Image (cartoon, rainbow, N blue to C red; front, side, top):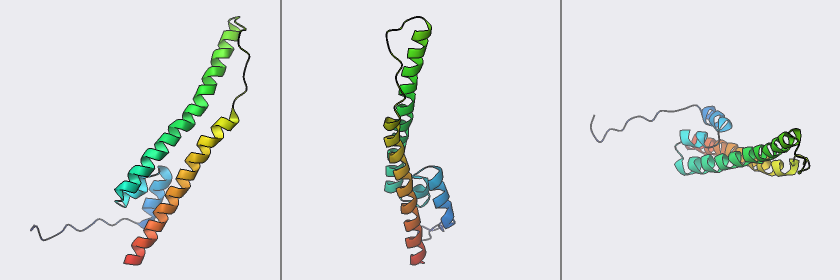
Length: 116
């Protein structure tokens, strides 16, 4: 194959990028070969997901520790309520990133189809 000849680009169905973005934000942009957007969504969604999981695990650990201490006869700390409001913010941020990601992929698919 000569250097002047280019390999044909593998085409993918437009809905494939949308489905991949629904599975994990940034995957659809990677399929579309939009590397900056893919990296941005992968990193920001991963951080927000870690934040969300941490906001659930930390209070559960505190409640479990208090319950085990209480069961062992150490009544120094009162049982605290589960902080629902501290979980809602990371959940909203993750949901917002997922929705913006999906809109971005669909708009890129529309631009791609209009160029054809």
